[in-house]
Image (tube, rainbow, N blue to C red; front, side):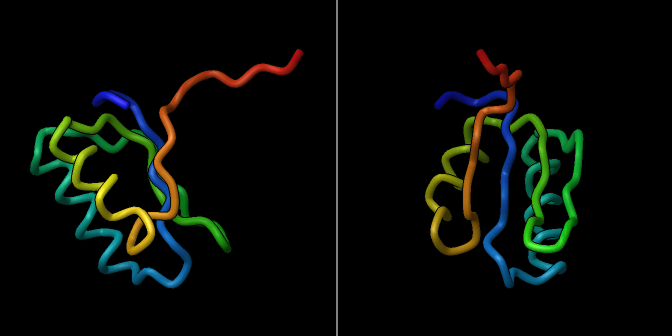
Amino acid sequence: MSAGKFIVIFKNGISDDKIRETKDEVIAEGGTITNEYNMPGMKGFAGELTPQSLTKFQGLQGDLIDSIEEDGIVTTQ
């Protein structure tokens, strides 16, 4: 994966303060948050990640981050 638009989903049980801190880091590193998700069982955001943020989040998968998916259009056949 290269830097670009991604959907980042946090693991269940991560505090709102830690989520806010993580989103603030994305912005401080030059990225943007375009959408936020705060539903029962799913907290996360969509946005543009810098290469540094993407690398950092990939290293946090399993601890803080549940999944990182490239944002795009999904179609059915």
